[in-house]
Amino acid sequence: MMNVKQDKTLVIIGGGAAGFFCAVNAAQLNPRLKVVIIEKNNKLLSKVKVSGGGRCNVTHSCFDNVELSKQYPRGQQFLKKAFHWFSVTDTINWFKEKGVALKTETDGRMFPESNTSQTIIDCLMQEANRYNIEILLSSDVSKINKKENLFEINFQNLTKIITANYVCVACGGFPKISQFDWLSNLGHTIQNPVPSLFTFNIPNNNITALMGLSVEKATIKIVGTKLQSEGALLITHWGLSGPAILKLSAFAAIELANKNYSFEVLINWLDGFNDQTLKDELLFLRQQLATQKLHSKNPFGLPNRLWEYLLLLSDINENIRWADLPSKQQNLLIKNLTAQSFLVKGKTTFKEEFVTCGGINLNEVDVNTMQSKKTKNLFFAGEILNIDGITGGFNFQNAWTTGWIAAKAIAASN
Image (cartoon, rainbow, N blue to C red; front, side):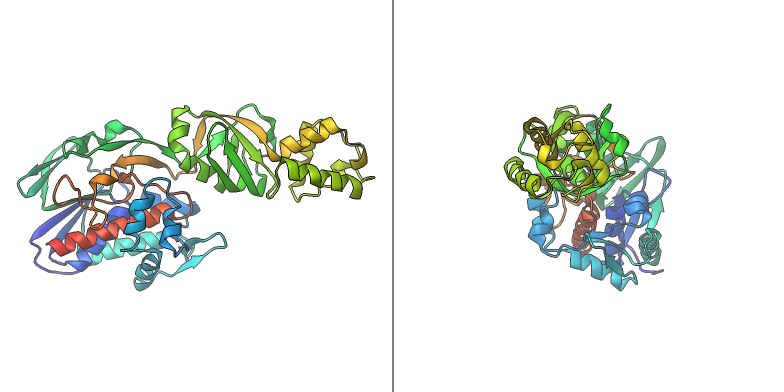
């Protein structure tokens, strides 16, 4: 622990990834700062704990800032500038300097080599202890007042008031716009929050009998929109999940909320085929596999259970040979393989990783400092901003980047 005279106070609201990263970096860059983290719950870094199945998906091995920014349905242009200040490489190096090595998996996700989120939690907690950062748990902020050069922070069900020279709001997103009310008196515009990163429910559809089955690369389109996604798709007991669905849910979050999560999707199970090219391929297969039965020969590399399901759905019985496939059944098979329709009714949160889009309007925040353009010495970091990324470590990278930029600006201004 460091014993240095502290003459100004930084209060960070939120004990998650962005809040901790801002706190430890501000304290390291300027030891004269008194740094306080306020967390409304009785646990710290709870999203870090559950991320990546308890392994913590720290970031993603995407080192081109333009490409990296494209993984954020909201906040692309803002983050393209922000990543100039603190990139994926900076994240890797920061943790490496603290003794935490990261490893890259085949899909680009990066985890601590220990394979446990506790490593990241321990690292951040050790840094907080090293710089004597004060932590207040079970302290729910109800209001922030600005009086001359000081902030007064009020709490729910508590009579005490904390004063601060600087405030960084890093409390994550909220599912309801009313939950932003305690920030409204500071003059900021709130983009209406809606869920992002969720799976699709398709009740009463017999494809759910194939739960646990996955396809490496499928294309999913939302009917009536230009929105589509491709990638791995997983069938669950309630509907559709996997990276392709989660990415689509993020980019379509606002439109799907407006549809009250009732919409139609089309799935192309075959990468590289459309209805015409598949028709040509089937004509070729009927010649090459003429005497073989469709049910016993799966020529597209699909999981066998899915192939059999699609054949039955296309009214193709077990005894039909390729040479005898009627045109009506062939056309049905083409449709089911390249544009199978599903009616989605509702959504399910992806594991415990609840993410929202919406939050503080980015036009009201200086990307180079994360300082409010409305209120001097008020800063924002993490998901409280109208920024959200797809699954794969991108939301944590936003937390590290915005937390670090805020920390650097605060430390330099004291």
